[in-house]
Structure formats: C-alpha cells, structure tokens
View 1 (cartoon, one colour):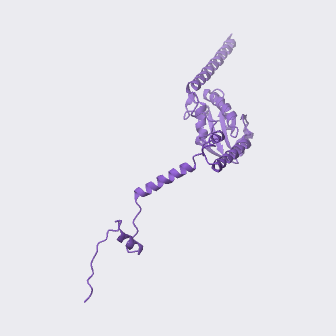
View 2 (tube, helix red, strand yellow):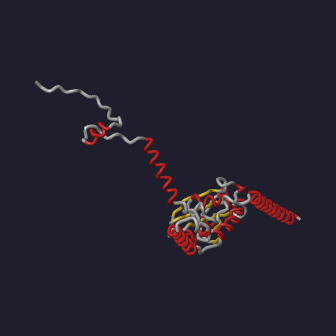
View 3 (tube, one colour):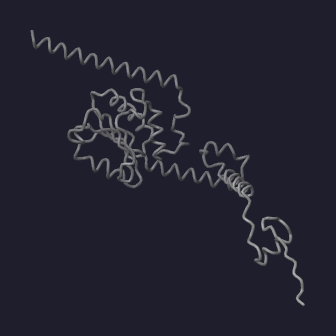
Amino acid sequence: MNDPKINMQVDPNEDTEWNDILRKHGVIPERPPSPTEQLEEALQEAVVRQWENRLEGKDLEELEDLEDEEDEEFLEHYKNKRLQELAKLNEASKFGRVYPITKPEYNKEITEASGNNTFVLAHLSLQSSLQSRLLSSIFIQLASKFKEIKFVEIPASRAIENYPDSNCPTILIYHNKDVVKQYITLTQLGGNATSLKDLEKVLVNVNAVKDNDKRLVINNQDEDLEESHKLRFVKKSIRSSNRDDDDDDDEDDDFFD
C-alpha cells in the first residue's frame, strides 16, 4: 500500500520560512522585488550621490569657506578639479570680441573654427533691421564675457546670395563643424525686447556654458536696470531711423528744387 501524500497549497508570494526553503531548492520561483523596496533603494542611492557630489557646483572661493567643515583630502580633490577647469578655460579664452568677416572667410572663420569642441555664433546681419542692431550690441557684451566662444558677424546678403531681409537677423550656432542650433530673427528669443539674459539662456541650452557658470547674470541681474537699458537702446534706434528718414526727405526735396 502506497504512503498517502498530502496535497499542500503554497502561495509563492508569501514571505514565510517554508517558502524560503522551497525557493532555495528551486521548487518555487524567487519572489519578485517589491516596488516599495525598489523605490526606497533608488531614493537611498540618490541621497548618497547627492552627498558625494555636494561640492560639484561650488567655485574655489566657496570651497575655501568650507575648510573647517569638510574632509581635507575630499576638499583638496575638488580644489584641484576647479583649478584644472580654470586653466582649461583660460587656455580656450582666446577670442573676446566680435569678428567681422567676408564670404571667402566663412569656412575658415566659422565652420573650421568650430572644430576641437569650440562654439561659434554667427550673426547674419542687416544694418537696417532694429533687431539686427540690437543683436550686434548683445554679441559685443557676450564676446567680452565668454572669451572661449567665438562671435562672428557677416552681412546676410554677402554670406548667402539673395538671402531674404525678412530672415534677418539670423543666428547660426556651430559646434565641431556642424550647425547645432539656428534662429531666424529674434522672434523665439523675445523679438525687439530680446536681452542679454535671453542669449545667455541659449548658450546654456546648447551646452556652450554651464548653467552654474559664475559669469552668467541669468538669475541675479537687476530686472529694472536691464529693462531700462533695453528701452533706451530701442528709443535710440528709433530716433536714428527717424533721422535717416528725414535726411532722405531732404535729399528728395533738394532733387526737386
């Protein structure tokens, strides 16, 4: 007579000692990880990474202030890292102004110059355009601040034959000999109200400048002061345009006298 067998129902999802034995011998499958446990592990890893990288965004001056709070060896590692970054930036800071170029120079001064991880911003300009004159002014400010980036200006009609005036100003951003971003007029940036801050955001978005770069004024510039400068520029440009129109009228009057 055969030994009677007891049919036992086992819930493989239960967390019991018996199930642990069965899993160990491969009788039942391993229990799937708990979503809650996975989330807790992910959060813990994020906390650890945040703590390990707590000095990542700090400059040398800020690191110096932490000498009494941080481990000396850990702090020294980040100081050396910042010094290397500054040395690299100083080595790349070879421009510092806006370069006017001609069509034969385009490939050398823009496309080829953007090699070796260099960013080149080209302004296809139109002197009669208010936005173009505004962009020229902003380019001068950017070039003096971010000397590792090359800023170039060329009349659009000389760069591209029959280029529409309505497309001016045009901004072409080159990196490693490719166009990585372009803006046809300043409509996407703020139109006639485009500011230095708007162009700095562009530099951050294309990774030409780090978002924690101390040279940026994106988060700390006086809004009222910036607005005042912007309105003054627009008013000056309008007066200049009106004077040009008056001069044209005088010339017409002289012609018919």
